[in-house]
Amino acid sequence: MMWKILNSEEEEWSLFISAKFKDRNGQWTCNWKQSSIWTGLKWAWNTLKEDIRWNVGTGSKISVWYDIWLGGCALIEEIGLTDYVKNHIRMKVQDLILEGNWYVPTELQQIISVNSLPVIRGGSDQIVWTINDGKFYTNVAAEKIRHKETFLTWPKYIWKNFLHPSIASNISELQQEVYVDDEVMRKNGFELASMCCICLEAQDTMYHILWECDFSVAVWNWLNGVFCFANPKSFDEVCSAANNKSPLVRKIWMIAACAAMRELWFQKNAKFFEEKKLNLNRNKCRIVQLVHEGGYRLNGVSWGNLMKLR
Ligand SMILES: [Zn+2]
Image (tube, rainbow, N blue to C red):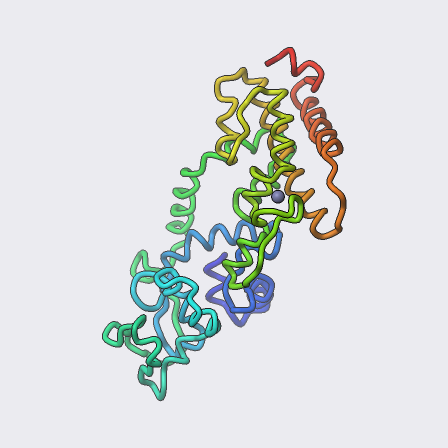
């Protein structure tokens, strides 16, 4: 699908998707649209983009920084987001061509070696799939994506019948970084003085919100009191925390911990966008309620008899 979008720029649905999911620099956005289509597309894109490069026609479609057209990777990965890049973020390869010849500004000659420049073919720019002689085969792409998927361990912990699909889907979004925090803004080239809107200290990153912030530490401490696990610092730690416990405790822990992560994320948004006051007790009640609802999926386990189980 991603390949079709890239190659059918004139078609209406492709234009629609491009408009919706490309950012102001014409790059595929990483975090803006919390759309279920985009979660899948973004992931496919991140997997496939390593194998896509451009043959220079006129250069009008090729981003100097983000596309692979010179050497083995995108220039931005080599040089990072320097001041020059920031000031010329929309620069196209076309801007380096004058009357069919390379014309690289002096400031760029340190980065772009004149000897390594590719042939200017003229005509429209072409995307080349670097596996299989430039031809794109859906089955090869699917194989690659499937191969990559096997390296992820967390999905097998959340797509379970005991965990409500909406929670599983939120955790999956967190894991695939489908959210906006200040770190994401900075990666997109915004300069900001960052502050957590809850504790008014530290930086506003999802890592901070989930694992470090005073409020989240209070929530994890409380869960600690129930489960006797160390406070996790990542979702991997959440997944492994209950490894030595009984299957039932493992399941309840996963519901409680995933519910806690989701509530921390949502509370931060509620505070940030709606200026709602945080309330630790309300947060705890919500987690207990989610565990309770999950308990029905587990044949009647309740928070009350959890103490006996552990
Ligand atoms: Zn904080």
